Amino acid sequence: LGNAFAENESIFDLGKWRYGTGFGAQWFSPFGPLQAFVGFPIDKLEVEDSPVFEFSVGGASF
Image (cartoon, rainbow, N blue to C red; front, side):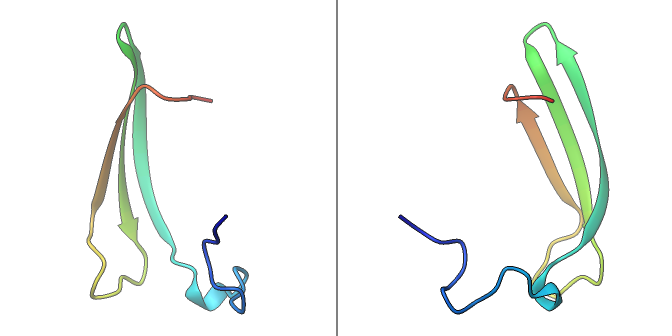
């Protein structure tokens, strides 16, 4: 149905992987799980935003 990368491209080319660090918090509220995360790219490219914020309501939690 679809690929996340081209056929002749390898997902194991570590030179193309992007790395980052961050932190997050999760709260099991009466309305369902609430999650917030902040991420910072390591060796940031000019086209990358920093920091990156993600907020989630509900969803699968492990």
